[in-house]
Amino acid sequence: MTRVELIRVYGGARLAGEVTVAGAKNSALKLMAAALLGPGRSVIENAPAITDITIMAEVLRRLGCRVALDGGTITIDTPETLAPEADYDLVRRLRASICVLGPLLARCGNARVAHPGGDAIGSRGLDMHVAGLSRMGAEIGSEHGFVVARADRLHGASIWLDFPSVGATENILMAAVLARGTTVIDNAAREPEIVDLATMLNAMGARVSGAGSSTLTVEGVEAMRPTHHRTVGDRIVAGTWAFGAVMTRGDVIVRGVRPGNLATALDKLTAAGATVADLSGTDTVPGFRVRMDRRPTAVDVVTLPYPGFATDMLPMAIGLGAVADGASLITENIFDGRFMFVNEMSRLGAEIRTDGHHAVVRGRDRLSGAPVRASDIRAGAGLAIAGLCAEGTTEVSHVHHIDRGYPDFVAQLRALGAKAERVTVPDEDLL
Ligand code: EPU
Image (cartoon, rainbow, N blue to C red):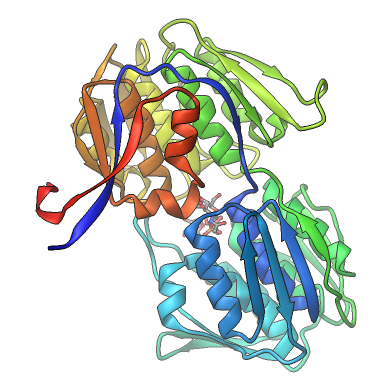
């Protein structure tokens, strides 16, 4: 009989205490790809212990690297000659592995990376990755389910992105560092993870300026060297705990992340009635404290590229709306399928109506515990946090999604005073 894992949370908790957040998944994965650019040993510190990192390590091994994962430290030995192909099996399990395309093309002059397809938050195109690399002289197309790219030596180019795509910015940036001449990427993504990547690339010998603004300028260099780098803290995990604190009327200190990196989210929590204090000035480790002593007031949220409200926090915004006083209008602008998890939130008694990319959420004083299914990383975490505000128990299935992005999720919930556990049940017990 097959058995599956669930996360069971008991309602009625108040999150209180201190939690330290590790490095950002969405940075560490790209930093690992960046290590491909400099032959020799690169070390990435403060990486999160999550399954996506394990899969990315395997992607790099198949390309010829030696990779060791030891707690938060990733050691990557990159050979002089890389294998230029990332196979379907791994890319299917980790869409982010498309970010090896740029570095492989720059290092090998050709690359074959399986087409990653979409996932449970919607279709996710590659047109901007392709257009940018083509502008730099790559011949790029699709063959037998692979993205295939060739270029003897990429050259600098002026590239305007239709939308500040995180993945396209990263792929083009990593290709441009070894191109001949200067590349300018306009309407580039401005996420803290892009700044982190540019910082590592510069430590490897690249010449990137403007990271954190909409215009990145990259002067190509002949060769890159390996480096040691510490991953920026995970603002989405930090935000998850911050929303959890407010939804449960708690008091949480979050360490390891600069509050400025999630300012829009923390502003919403302040508007909902919480008190947010920046602890970065007083301590060596950056962090912040979130306190709430009453039922949150409903707030409207619009997701946008950074510095706007992060789409990855949308399930938390819906969870907040579900227990807030009043109605919230939540607008999703990044992924067409981000509302797919809303049915599961409704199982907890949340009153949500969606229309296109808008959702109206009418708050209730208490939700009602139920079995629910995680459809992606953030939906899983959002459902578990909402379960803390529900009467009775909530069992979240498909926990492998949560494991992809949240290190020690249950342990951190418990450290903050929640009653939660991982349980294994026979398959047929599931809905
Ligand atoms: N898009 C295109 N064409 C492109 C590239 C993107 O149409 O060539 C579209 C996508 O379909 C999507 C939108 O543009 O609708 C935004 O995509 P973007 O490229 O910015 O996102 P991504 O690089 O695929 C990263 C994170 C996501 C996060 C988004 C937005 C990683 C591994 N993933 O995805 O994180 O939601 O940026 O901030 O960095 C997660 O961690 O759970 C997650 C989904």
